[in-house]
Amino acid sequence: MNTSDVFDLAPAPLETIPFEYLCKRQFLRPDIYEGISQNFPVCASSTGPTGFSFYWGDPEYDQLLREHPAWNAFFDAAHSQAFIEACIQQFRPAFVAHKCCIDLDKAVYVPYRESREDKERRHILEIRHQPHELFVRLDVHQGYTGYSRAVHLDHRRRLLSMLVYFCDQGDMDGGELVLHGTRLRVLRPEMARVRPEPNLMAAFACSPVSYHSVPVIKSQVSPRNFVQIQISSSVDAWPS
Image (tube, rainbow, N blue to C red; front, side, top):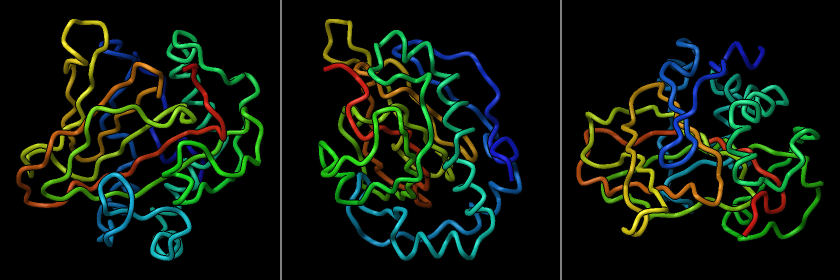
């Protein structure tokens, strides 16, 4: 199955305030979305931002890929040269404006699996690839009551972060994606807010100004289910 058969990767205008980002409804083909949503796992307690996650290499994650065709199609579509090229083209203005250090004209996908331990590290312990050899993380997350993220930037080796939601803001109080500015007198003021909804994609280049947060989930009817996809180099992709 081609990447374009799974995702809607057609170019779209970028929002620019407070930084370059994009939201797109009906991002996954409906049958793929339904197949994933109906088989979204209950994640055990683990490391990671939400405290409940499955990463590529975990036995439960590999079982998802083996047993559910929609999950496997999702995984294969994201781990591809076509996906990387479409994302680079979509966010090229941000890569140029914020002086991405990677030669994106040479960008090529490599099937590298970053370990759970290396994900937590500021730098990958053992560098195996050139800066332009890019890999993909597709992480399964669940957020429960009490989950939040303080204002932060993603690792500087990340080029792009993408969230695909399998939940609805109407089922929870809190848990939005909040985007913050950097140029006003107030320290990193809130300037945009993305409300999760089924099959909504939100993506941004992980530039040095892409500050974001998640306000605490105060109550919920169902978990904040989402998948985070990140395109990454093995070294820093942005200037200090």
